[in-house]
Image (cartoon, rainbow, N blue to C red):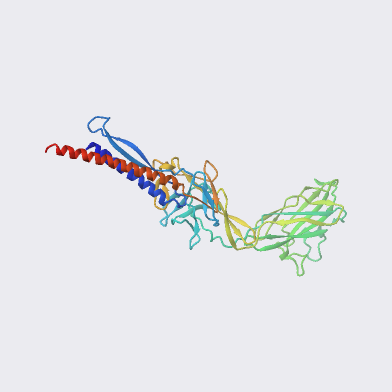
Length: 425
């Protein structure tokens, strides 16, 4: 009977082995699937106090969650793979949190990224500054809408003629904005800037030679006044006077100081201009020169843009999702953190190729991809299953042979039992 009981435990163990092989084979094409293996250990019957009374074998199932599957490219930007350690954080329809390596995310009807098993990708809005915190938002790739970007910086590089006649009467300078007569200035250009709503403002910039002061901190150096007005406030036909509030007040005015020997700017940069209904533009004029040649504009740029439509998204290796717009601008929308546990092979496996942490796996730690031992995010890619069919089929033959051998042991035990029963006759 002991012989037959041991053989039965062997057949049960081999059945469990075949079951795990079957599970692996059926998931050979499941994105992010980690193959499982059946582990055998000896059973000892100690009921009678004898520690050497063998009672067969028992099995346990071990998921090899720490294995890295091959990463293959796809044509979908929101298909995501992890190269290295870590898991995506996802939720189901009820809001329960899980971990997964299945990154086959596509937008649903509402624009939320959901994978092939129906789990939603979670992240944090980039504006929250919580890139490595518990993700609280479903990642949505269509709700960004049109994007206006306010101007905050620009660059203006010009050459000012050193031979220009200086304007020495303060009341005639552009900063005084005389209402009766045109201001006296040397040269003028303009910069296009954008307010908080994406409205364009043409900023007229006046540059006026104010000569060489004989006293004060700029004594002995060439000075120019730089003054900015919003072109929308100009008089009919453009130019002075500007209808500012309060009157005779430019958006900004400052002094540019040049070296009389080299013609390079020594002070006055950046020139800070508050944009109406917008931000303050730090206009870099540091490369402006005063040389014996005509007025010329070498660089005239400013950041910011008018509203433009969303054309797509890009996802970087650290998990930052950027919205791309038709005018070429981009804007960070979400940070997608990764999660890790101390013992990933001990995670609890659930339907849909997701996992939950438990006491044996350790608690979940969140972080930015590519930091703290976490892997990197690979966009337009998926992680293949770690199942090797050739290995599984080979093990299937081994498990079948072992099952058959245990069945022979059981049959032999049954034959011996028949012999014992026949001794009575």
